[in-house]
Image (cartoon, rainbow, N blue to C red):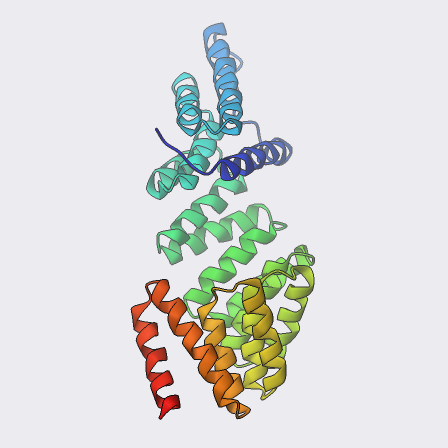
Length: 303
C-alpha cells in the first residue's frame, strides 16, 4: 500500500481545497458540458466530481492509495476532467512518482491550458528531475498566467541560480519578495545568491531580514556568519554560527566555520574543539570525504 507522512497528506489536502477555490475563480470550469450532451454524460460528469471530492476526503485520512483510485475513477468517468489529472499528479509528486506526476500535469494542461497551477507543479517536478530548462519554460508560463504567484518566481529564481544565472535569480527573488514581503524564503535565497556573487553586505542585509521573519532558521544564521567572516567581523561571525549550532547541534559545517573564525582570532584550542566536533558529526553522518579533510585540519593544528 502506498504510504506517505500523514502531515504531508493533510497539507496536500488543504492545498487542493485552496487550489480548487482559486481555480474556480481564475479559470474556466473544467467540467464544461456541450448543450447537446446526453443525460448519461451529465451523470458521469457529476459522478466524476463526487470521486474527486471522495479522493480529497481520503487524503485527510492518510489513504493515499484510495485517493489515487478515486481520481483514476473520476478520469475514467470523465476523461476531460482536468482537475482530476491535476490532483492525481499532485499526489504522485508527493509520493515521489515525478514522471507519473508530469504525465498527469501534461494532460491537465492539454485539457485546460489557462490554469497556471499545472504549469507551476510540472515545473517543480522537472526541477526535481534536473530538467532545468524545461522547468524554466513551465514556470515562465505559470507566471504569465498568474503574475502574482510569488512561489513561481522563487522557484524560477532557484533554477536560474543552479544554471549560474545569478543576476536573473536575484531579479526573480526580488519579485517574489515584492509580492510577499513577509515570506522569509525570498530573502534567504536572495541573500545566498548575493553571497555567491561576493556581495557580502547585501547578503547580510537580506539574511538579517530572513532571520527576523524566521528566527529558527539555522541556515540563515550559518550563511550570515560566513558573510560576516568574509568582512572580517569574526566576533559577529562566531555569534551567528553559535546560534546556528544552538538551533541545530548536528550542524557540522557550522562548527568548521566557527572554528575558522576562532583560528583567525588566535583561539587555537577553541578551533581544535570545533574541528573535533565537526569531524565526529561528519563521520556519524556518513560524509567520509569531508571527515578526512577536517581530520587533516586537526592534525595540522596539533603539530
